[in-house]
Length: 478
Image 1 (cartoon, helix red, strand yellow):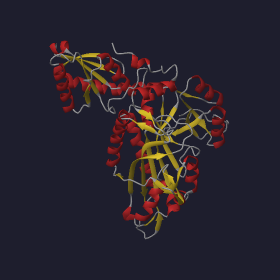
Image 2 (cartoon, rainbow, N blue to C red):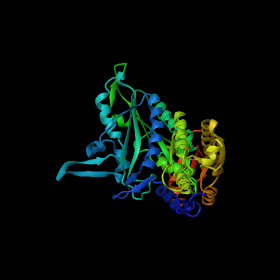
Image 3 (tube, rainbow, N blue to C red):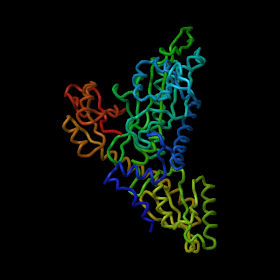
Image 4 (cartoon, rainbow, N blue to C red):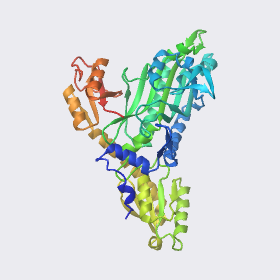
């Protein structure tokens, strides 16, 4: 039996979802609080998950020609204010530096909330001709946004992310890149993190400040709240004109470039927790798990047990499986519970009796199924179970999303549906911002996205009853 003390310290999801989330983050040792509110310490277990996400994304980015770079942390106020809509959107969240040592600065410096203006300034210097295009750059960094309410991973004043910024000769190339990056995010979320998403375009009210179009991937958490997992923006030529990013075309004409920006943050770890976690802690999909298999030696002080555990570790490592041996002096029960809290996909138990029978016991984290496997075929069995677990986790999350997605034809149906069974509600919209504002003021409901795949649920707007133009996913969100 696993040691229950660790699990008992985690509040049930159904009892208090918010407290459950905090308990899991703490007990799985993902983050810790720092001395500045809203600035979190990402502990090794949390950072290891982010490294896996980074690897999967970075590999895909580079396959499309993207190169990594690094931009400065600080932005002069005059540079930030060059694009009025952009600065207006971020002004309430900006942190400012006014002193350098003991000397007051002549111009305030903004701690980057995002880096559009830095990339624009750079591109204005290096892009001169059509031969310089496209420019496909990305940086992995942290940004600061002075949020009022904070929560580990989901909303913090400093967070880690990547931000890609590209410039193109034509509007068509920029739109193509915007959608390409959105599809990469969806691919990583669905195939690596086992999180089903809805892809779509944000309404003008919800789009990024300064963009002509913002595309998003939206996911549904276990409590029925929506979470924006990543966004990709088409800036058109607005930033280019504000920052004089222009080039000499093949026709010998001066043209403004067309830009994109796209990003994903450490809030994806929060999504992973809330989509897959259970009352015993984390459940990490095998493909993204930093450790896929934990080997727990039973009666490890007995001769040959630890040697066999390490031999199995070497065998699995050769097959490309990420594995560790828990050879600490804790009891097996404690080790079982610890592995469960941390969400390690597969536990491998090996003891004297198993060695005698030339077998090992494998336990899946997601459903706790126990499998007795012969040592001669152990690697193949582990690979099979990890593959099955990855698929099963995605299928369960997708089934939950479908079960929590309903249709509504009028305002009463929309609100009643979300009050009774939180999730996504698909409903028609006339395109008027007043209707969006009314829904948010009335019941805290926001438009999540205008999905790529459109269906006609009715011919009238769910709010005002006028002729509808688009089907929208609505919900309450983090």
